[in-house]
Length: 185
Ligand SMILES: Cc1cc2nc3c(=O)[nH]c(=O)nc-3n(C[C@H](O)[C@H](O)[C@H](O)COP(=O)(O)O)c2cc1C
Image (cartoon, rainbow, N blue to C red; front, side, top):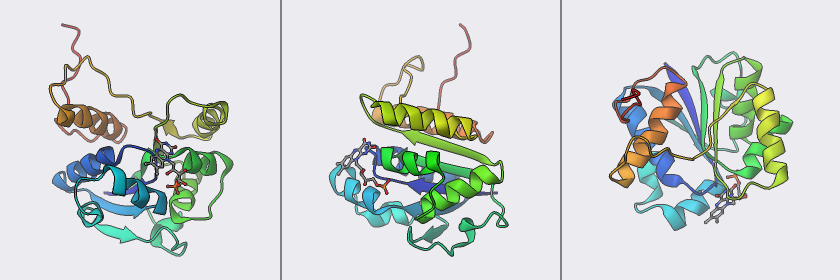
């Protein structure tokens, strides 16, 4: 079970950290790519050295390496998550650009009809971003914005992160145990 995780420069580095820690605890083999934008955001949002994030990928790729395994559809994976997904990377995915490894791997994921989960974060959404979300959706991606629900009555930031991680991994039928599910009661 191999999952590609792209981390780009939207606000929300803790979402990426939480997802990667959870995938590691589940024993999922991850291919991690962290963009230059994400590294810049980490300087603002990351509480620990960036190496803590980078060390969580089973395999780590440089975003400039377009010859990496995950740049080819012949390399099999479960799919890909981009979390957070910046407006810039969203636009590349929507247009089918592949000028860095994250965009190329996303394009490959779509062409192979594998699950591609995009976790955009912006507020408010400008029209180009709304249009690009629709384009990505129509191309087969799942647009799952970083908008945690509160019906699971979170008591901590960790609970909020756990909610997002659980909803992302629900798309791959991976159970995290990190979220109180709505039962109707
Ligand atoms: C502190 C900080 C916060 C940012 N927050 C967001 C954000 O929430 N959403 C977004 O789309 N871009 C955000 N950006 C801008 C992106 O990082 C920038 O557009 C970058 O070029 C994205 O490139 P990438 O997709 O290759 O990571 C932020 C930038 C900085 C420095």
